Image (cartoon, rainbow, N blue to C red):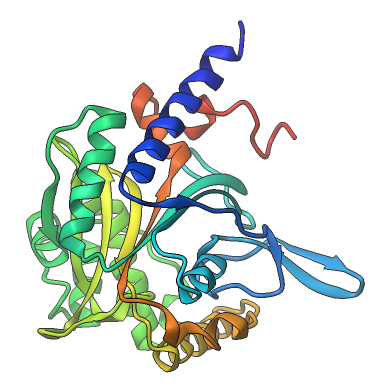
Length: 314
């Protein structure tokens, strides 16, 4: 069987996404795949290289480099990037995968929702975009309010849902225990129910799960973060960007403390980015799993069905 139809299908979807973004004034960019800096995240481990006795990293995301461009007044930009994450393998994950990432200065979550709705309509022929808060989704599907719930409440909820949590959970700091149970409830209980009749934009996340998002100025228990789900699959992650370098540095330092508590390696902070981070414009950034999007267009449940190469055959 010829591989050409698959290659053509991926190319058509990529072309459609590119046309949509370019028609809105975005410029496509390229950034280095190998670098000495990244944005540490608790559960994402980079692929490391050694070059001339120096440690380098394959990008887990083009985010730090693209934000440096934003700080230099690039304007709206996007990139189809090859990303790498160590020891990730499954129907929706692989060590190497393709990410579409875009940043729009001046945007807010409402205007970004319009862009997302249009992109999904073109690629998946969906209609509309359901807006659902984290609180309402958890109450509806897990019978718990994540904005007010204590750790003991989340643990009780996870037990009632028969979730299997790590045996080492109790050894972690209480805040990290809360986050891990929250993520387990989200991925195993809530997410499979989202995006069924139409794509769902899950917003208003707990402040503790803000990542690099601003906190909601109207309610500091919430963050201006969102994820988009289609047919129970997490397809996008994004937020209203926090631009204060001191705030981001503090969050990254805290991330490394948690990584150490999980017996993971602390990762270097992106000092080049942080030195210009205050120059970033207000706006929104979005990361879309391109392989997952192509998978969804075919009705498949594995990204391997829409890629010729994967980490098992190269």
